[in-house]
Amino acid sequence: MEYLYSLSNASLVLRIVEHLHNASWVPVRFMTVIHRLDGWLVRIKLERPLSPLQDGNLRAFLNELGIPYLPEVRIQRGLWDLEQGQSPIETMRRYQIAVVSHGKPDRTEIDAFRQQFVQGLGYCPETLS
Image 1: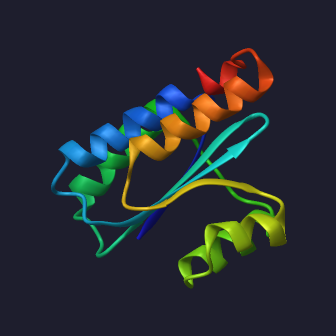
Image 2 (image 1 turned 90 degrees about the vertical axis):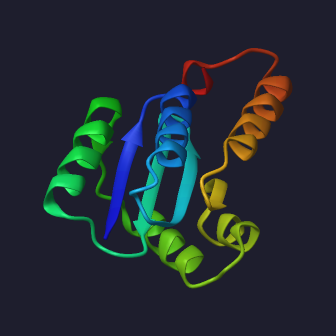
């Protein structure tokens, strides 16, 4: 079972990370976070299916923050490679996507990416707020 959502800014991504840490009933196998110029993509892959009620609750939460996303081929292939064990760096090179985090949900990787990106630009774009 998996969920793939498009989000407008980093704060929403961090809310998902916090929610997953607090929701012990969600058996997260891995979470992938990709930054795009127009926002963020979050893929959550589960160890096992949720009950219909749990699935509905998680989807309701995710729908409040973003919109379900159907990836183009390049992103699909990158997500597949990451799932198959390809390194994020190799995946970024091959598909020209910015993989911010892949594995257990971790806010430190997202925060570090935000800081480095903002420092390099000299200002904070809306997607990084």
